[in-house]
Each structure stands twice: as structure tokens, then as C-alpha cells.
Image (cartoon, rainbow, N blue to C red; front, side, top):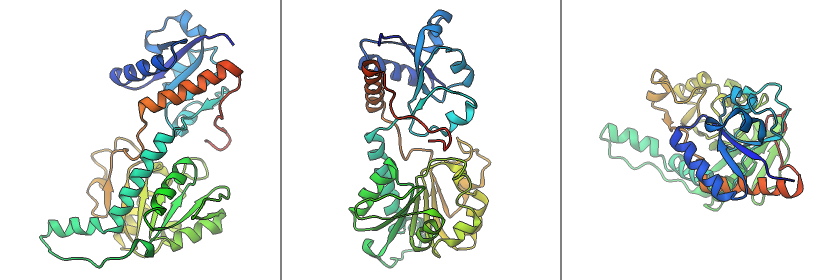
Length: 315
């Protein structure tokens, strides 16, 4: 296939977009990669691939001849939601470095809950000097909801620290050393047996509101919850009620229904919640650009598209 023009379409800052543009151009020396912001109408007609990061839907509509879209993010639910009826294939970023970044955060915040850091923080505020009882990692079960690339990498890293790891996914998985479950009964089992739940599910019609009052109520008394997936998977009101009642011990939230989290949100000041600014699984621009470039080169060589999003399920 002959090379054509590649459009970079983002709602990033000028500085952030310029970084991606430089990296993509360096990784694709035989291609012409242009920011949509600088493209003429003729150049927009020439573009056959769009590389995107939270693009304005109207910007993508200005590229009538693109064959497919490559997202710079692993999560594509916003892109899919904002492009109803869009009929070109959408490829999400599958980057081993992203999985490593996420697994680091998964382990770090698992230890945060396992070693009772929220309780020690409260004791510090009250000037209380008190050692809490120690428990072994081998006596703690971590349940991971979502066993894709990110969940599998996190399971491996957490299991290596002697935690018991169980997991749940839409379809049955088989991971070494991990008790894998699926289906409604499997979800109930994971929730009931886990001391810490780590949510790494994609946001789809099936997972929106999945952790509602009923399912949060199925969790162990005093269990911890970490959400590194998407905010709408958890019913925030139900979560606050479960924390206020003492049924759940603490929640670490890195994702929210609205981001940035509004200053008016009660989540900021809730004593049972740790708020993070969506930093658990950052995309590494260097490795991300290399992955995108490799997929584009393969497409140019063979005409075969990379694996792309199943729009019927949303990922």
C-alpha cells in the first residue's frame, strides 16, 4: 500500500500534542504526520489514518477518507460514546508499559490498604500512638475485577508478594496462580471472599453501575476497594453509604463520573476515601508512539488492521 497522510487529532494542550507529534514523526520517518490543527482542507481529504486522543467528534468528521482510527489511550469508552454511528474501525492502545505502570499502582495501593495506612493517617491527625495488629499477606485475598492485559499484569505482581489472588471477568480466564471466575455467581464469590477488591473493568453498558448497593453489600465487612477503572462502574452514593455504615473500610478512587473531580464533591473530604487524580495507569508517550507506529507499519505492509474495538461490547 502507498503511504498517505496521518492526522493527529486531540483535545490535548498544544505542548502535549507537540510531544506526541514529535514522537510519532520520529517513529514513522516514511510517513507524513500532521496535527489536524495545522491541516488544510486538501490535507484533511488526503488523510487515511487518524491517531487520536479524546478527539472532538466534529474534527473526525472533517476527515472523510480515513480507513481507521488509532487511539492513544487504552480506554476507548468515551471515544465510542461520542461517535454514535461511526463505522470505521477503532484500535485502542495495547502497551505492555501501560500494564507495568498499572500493576505498580495496583501493588502500591494494595499495600496501602493491607498495611492500614488510612488508619495510621487518622491516628496521626489525632496524635494517637498505637500499633495496629499485623496480618500476613498470605492471609489476605485480593479480588481483581477485570482480567485483561491490565488485570492480568496486576494479578501477577500482587500474587508475587504472597497475597491470595482471585479474579472475575466477563468470559472465563485461566491465569497461573489465580482463582478465576466469571458469571453472576462468580462475581458474588469474588466479592464475598476478598479482603481488597481492585476494579480494572472496562466501562460498558454491562459494567456501568455494576458495583451498586447490592454488590457492595456482598463484600466482606471492613473490606477495602480500589477503583482504577472508570468512575461510573461504582454507584458513588451506595459507596458512601457502605463506608458510613462501617460495612466497608476504605476506598481508593482514581477515577470519577466527572473529571477533574469538582471542588464541590463530597468525595474530597470523606474520611473513608482517598482521592487520586487519575494517575494509576499513565500512558508513556515514548512506548505508546512506538506501539502506534508498529501497528501503522504493519498495516502499510500487509493491509491488515490491528485488533480493533468490538463496538457491540465497547472494548
